[in-house]
Length: 423
Image (cartoon, rainbow, N blue to C red; front, side, top):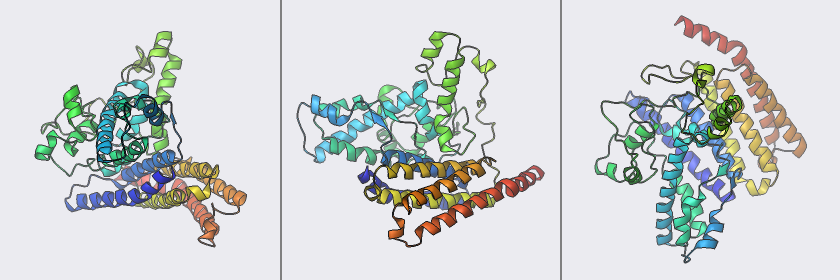
């Protein structure tokens, strides 16, 4: 996990620069596709996912390393051939795990976060799950295991394969000619993220588009059907933690309320969105019926809230970078305490972005948690060795953040609401 953290320290600023470039390009072209607060929410989601992954907060029932040790017909070296095979098999694995996440009710919970943005831009590529706590699809890597591709090659190729899916989350790149027949392009992926009936559950491929054509899930982007983005049951929150478990919460409620024992069991494995008979009337859930007539979430925000959210996100990235760069030095179990603080930070910041009065209580909890950590360890995870007054800086920041949260809840939200009503 330390190695993956080092990779992310390099990747994070690259992604951030590209997101800013897309924003500036959109402004220049008078076609801004990246509202700031939506992008902040997406980056916050990426932070929670990366922290979860680096801390190893997931369980793999069937590890690839065990698989290759048991069924390999030969053992390849870590060379160009083994990396090529690994990339190809991982793309096959990615297609099917992605497709199943769209088609099976309980699997959709871990993937809904990625589709939750009602925009389509580079930042939304970072909306990755924390709800994927169990890896169920290692068996799809059996072809690589049979050929004896080393586990180390798979471990390197998996994040590379993921990072290569970043670039095509944009509306600014149109169709790419002959490449449309070979790789996944922005046009293909706009179709995938769209909630138009014509586009639902299409284009699951991740790098090579031919998987969709081979397995019958391909759909070209149509000039007469502009894609509309989001999920048909809108998230209606900027909070990535809440979004990660919204669908699961609904499944649990529906399973509990179902009178038929068969429904209680089968609801988990039914097609995504399935509910027991009459539940839409008895227990209605907001759903978009006309994709061209709905109001996007959270479009009315004061500039103060938007820029404070950006500042909080950038400060959180500094916290994350320090964690990723010092995992070995911080050690166990302290890295999990640090990770918990980051999750609380994201949750508190998102509650403020949602204009929730409870954001003040979350900010109080975050302030107390930081004080407890510094008091218990006598330092912020050895930060004072680098900056002698590091602990005092962090305490001052946390206190100021609490005061600013109080300002927004007691003054700014009420003022802004009146301004938007009167405008």
